[in-house]
Image (cartoon, rainbow, N blue to C red):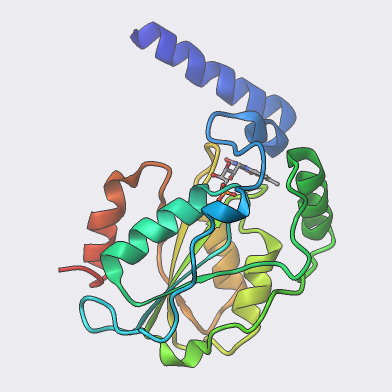
Length: 206
Ligand SMILES: Cc1cc2nc3c(=O)[nH]c(=O)nc-3n(C[C@H](O)[C@H](O)[C@H](O)COP(=O)(O)O)c2cc1C
């Protein structure tokens, strides 16, 4: 068993080394198409006070649904508001065209327009910010979201899902993007087991 696991790890590492992050897109946790509308979770706005009394927003972007599931789970635990970051012109539902648009936005460092209205971020003490890792960092609509309002002094708690990459490069990128906010160490939430501990460390659950 151990030998099989080792071989799998080596194949994955070789694929990444050979092809770069594009090769990760084909890996296990990859969503092959955008989640259908019916699976979408309704925003919860107007109830910012979370379970430990802090004003909390769980804001997330998701294309295939993995991050949405994690955001919903986190929101159930923390309470507060829940908001889905959506592009004004959604990404294509098919995988390949979606990656092409995402790649172009990334290469040109674009800030795609978002569907409004956005919540007023002034009202929150803590923003849990969720996204899939795209080419090692957060997708560009997440940057549009965090740059749209003044987040000076706000606590930002990033969480992400991925096909294998860690969250560190995206946290560094968010820190560069938001030098005046307190961007805390993020949680890679491909496995949900660490969520409770992370929320507790950050005073969001008892
Ligand atoms: C455009 C695109 C780029 C991706 N880049 C990476 C990457 O660099 N590293 C990685 O581990 N996974 C990568 N993935 C896989 C996603 O991070 C992973 O499937 C994630 O769980 C998808 O979340 P979602 O279902 O909320 O969209 C990429 C996926 C897409 C569509």
